[in-house]
Image (cartoon, rainbow, N blue to C red; front, side):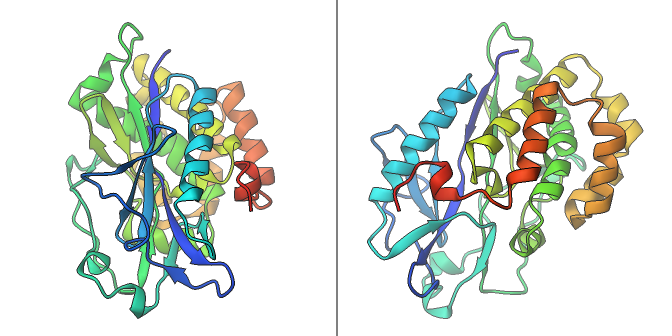
Length: 299
């Protein structure tokens, strides 16, 4: 099945010598409504204190990975000497980095919950110095590929629910650092998405899957599995067996033992051979992935 895959990950800037987190607002040109166009074809802007880039959609994961690698190299040229781009799901910023109205603003354009079929409430932060980074997945329709359901409102939500099972539950096992746990307080709840004219934007994951191209390949393979399930109209039966409430609670509370149980009992029999290979390879290596080396970015 053909589909398009794109993304718009967020990253933080940090002083190399002091490890102080630095706001991207005065450093990265471009805004959400008017991003800076990069030579690689990506778009770059600041989003609150983070920096964010967007990719073009691709139907082949190898081309998407090459595109992301080229964007990373372009982005590095925009970062002043003494600062580095870091791939962490959340971080605390000092008050001097949060003085502008833009830095103080929480929430963004509305997104929705596929499980409740309702708009998500803007997050309420108890720790006003905490900021987070997402790694959203944009899945798009391709003509004559059997994924017309991506253009239907209910088909989009069916896709998001099964992505919670495949992407959301596995992320609990792969992305369980203290920074990931703190992010889930604000963002990344189960079912979070935005419908788009080309398909759907899945907004549950952090930027963890940009630690390595191998994780991007895993996300792509899991997406293919998801679309095949929805195409075959097996999604409702699967949700009934696993339990929609169980999936949501496992993701929202980051319950590792429940995620492992879902994986062992329900998910592995549904995963393709490629997805199993990428998942286990990433589970084994994720603690050793070197962000800069994996993407061939010069130090």
